[in-house]
Image 1 (cartoon, rainbow, N blue to C red):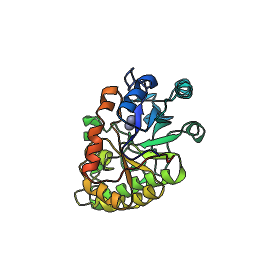
Image 2: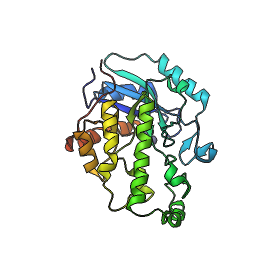
Image 3: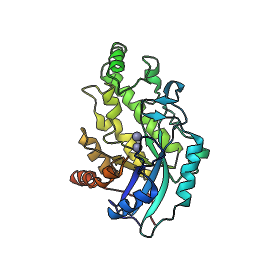
Image 4: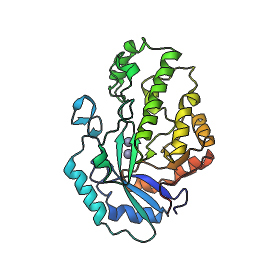
Length: 280
Ligand SMILES: [Zn+2]
Ligand SMILES: [Zn+2]
């Protein structure tokens, strides 16, 4: 069984252009072993759909089926050295309130684990009518354009309802998909809502996330942290409710992977419990 703190489930592969060309199995695995990692996941981005039906959106591209097949082939062909366990996996998106995710069950069945991310705001019924949610949250001009629409829902009740729907989307995804093992770059859960200005000043964020803690703990899904967070109280309460955490640097290069100890130390400094995917 892999011991806690000796795993990293979010290592990107060279076939995705966002990853450095050196991120091949023959290079990643020796580095992982030198870091005393006992279990790792090599991750392929997988997005069947992108906002506005585009082929490319911000930093993400639609999946190229041939590339996915090549990824699977290379993972299969690699001879795994003794002392490390390697999982195959995809990083895909949470799409809507029903918990729909951005990979079909048939394709997902070809890998060991799914990492669930939000790279854009999932479609939530409550805000769909008020403003187009699929704006680029990294573009200041688009965020500014959102402001007048946002006035309609501003207020604690509106914020609270949106956060409830956001948390419900996560819960529904976990309940309908057992392959999801990691909530990728989850941090304090507030990154995207905060960026979009959806956190009212008076919302009790811990209370908003409370229903998610239970599902995450019960299903042994790991809560991933890749950098220090603003709302530590959310993590401390999750920990109390039995949520297990996992450190990663969401590595797209070997040098970033080599620096992963910093994030392990951050999790330790908060006193959070760590978990693993596989018990062997
Ligand atoms: Zn991501
Ligand atoms: Zn990633």
